[in-house]
Image 1: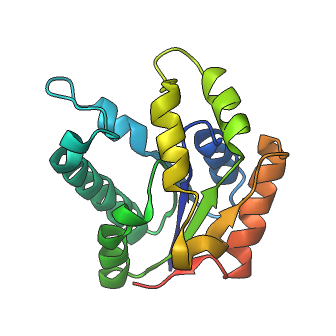
Image 2 (image 1 turned 90 degrees about the horizontal axis):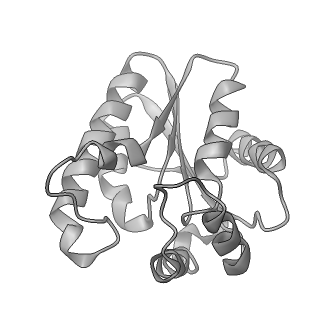
Amino acid sequence: MSNVLLLTGPPGSGKTTVAQLVATDAPRPTVHVTTDEFFRAIRTGFVPPYLPESARQNEVVVDAIVAAVAVYARGGYDVVVDGIIGPWFLPPYRSAAGAGDWTMSYVVLRPGLVTTLDRAQARSAGELKDVEAITGLHGAFAELGELEPHAIDTTSLDPVQTAAEVRKAVASGDYQLTA
């Protein structure tokens, strides 16, 4: 049975860096899927995914991501998915996991806002650095309701420490989602 890890959090939380570490050091064949690449594939008509008018685009992109994840999982690979996967995007993942033969864990990296903004501003050119957008997305992960236990405060952790915490969280089984 394949395992899928949805690794999420606001921009600047370290998702991609941590996902690379988790996938590279995995004990089984593992694929790292970066959701940003699916959004970057839209060359004409792209709408920043944090804007309200991006809703239809976001649905299509999430469906494409879920389809790719399902193919890898069906092929026997574990998959580490990094991206902004808020609770509002979980239904397609849950449906696919229910239809497939794979488990799914959900981990939210949630550093404090100041740390998130500092990390986001230090990222390479082309990455989201808009303070208002990042602050809004940070707020979207501030209250997760029933998924609150899936959040890890990474304010004082470096990427290697965060990856270790993520591995421990997934191994505990406490971060699994049901279909």
